[in-house]
Amino acid sequence: MKTYLYSALIFAILICTSYMPEPDTVFEVRTIASGLSDPWSVVCAPDGKIWVSESKGYRVLVIDAATGERTTVLDLNPAREFPSFDELRRSGQAVPQGGLMGLALHPDFSKGKPYIYLSYVYRHLQQHQFLLKLARYRYDVKSNRLDSPQTICDTIPASNDHNGGRMVIAPVKGKPYLFYAVGDQGSGQFSNGGRENKAQQPGSYEGKILRFSLEPGQSGNWIPADNPVAEGKSAVWTTGHRNPQGLAFTLLNGQERLYASEHGPYSDDELNLIEKGLNYGHPLVIGYADGNYDGLAASVSREQNYPGKWHTTYPLIRSEKRNADSIGAKFRGPVKSFFPTAHAELSRLFERIQQGTRADWNSYAPSGIAVYRSAAIPGWQQSLLVTSLKTGKLLRLKLNSDGSVAPRVFEYVPSRARYRDVPVSMDGTRIYLATDSSAITSGPTAENPKATTQRGSILELRYVSRGR
Image (cartoon, rainbow, N blue to C red; front, top):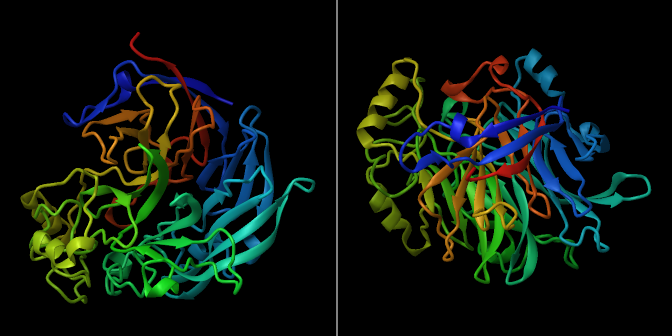
């Protein structure tokens, strides 16, 4: 296992006054596992072990953080009703974004409820469309395996793009529930440019955050009766999301706070405070309702066979403010929008993309998030930690008592890796980072997988010093 030091002061780049390294914050970074098949979700168990879902490998692993020893407790490859990812690529067929993604442990996992909740793409329907299943498994300590699967929902849409894929267990009025983030399937952009975007349609699970019970009801139904859509017959909790890839919960001054990280299109990656029945605007409002997308759409395509000014099924945004006003009291803007690019710059960027000219833009592409609650690192208590896929950084934002976030964004451990998830050990002394196995992404920012480092790894960060 490799051990090395990172200093945010030395390596991080000062992007602007609100995006900065924190002086003299140093971590010892140790690779505890490598060669994994795209680890997606990482969870720290009460016994100190680390649970990992391999999105491409379709395996659930338990890793001993001290020794790096790993055990496969579940192999879901037999449950996948389509060929392996390598076989799909070789034959030129669509490959789902993610695969085996969400993983969560029951809050009483070590107290008589040894349940693990998982999400995975299991069926190919047509072209770029798939189906995803949520299931609960029981962990058998004697056999060290997951068994007794129960299907929670098997009708969740999936795609080759924007599947979301994060889950978390969080309380509502003190009772724990399972929340699951579903992206908009990439509808309106790239290979899905002609597909209708349904993030604003409450009858669809696309572009939503869903809520389920941890136990089935008497009728076998896992959907809570007090969900806000269709009188509890729908799992929809919130609408208007693009590609939410992070979910994290904390208590602030006794108030339950659930946060989501979300990818923006060409600007405005978001952090959202998730509340029952609210609408987060996509694709009618991008980031803040500040007008920077007025006269544009949430995406642009070079293809000429799609309707609309920007050759996409995304609606033309005539006015973000009017759209927000039209949604009304249910509209909720982000608590933080990263890189809210000016209208003129976005217009030039869209023109370059339409002309086939190389284009790049400022973005973090946030994925997994966690709330750091411990006092082990000075000044970090009640901070939101965010992983970055595009820039390979761990971000930290201080949470305010009202649920908002402080404006400064601190950056740590920069590298060429794509950081996918970030759990924190129970005592707060360790932070873990999962890295993708490649740097491949969708659309014009696709990269060479050889350009990334620390591929398919779990990294352990141990705080060394501050203010030396």
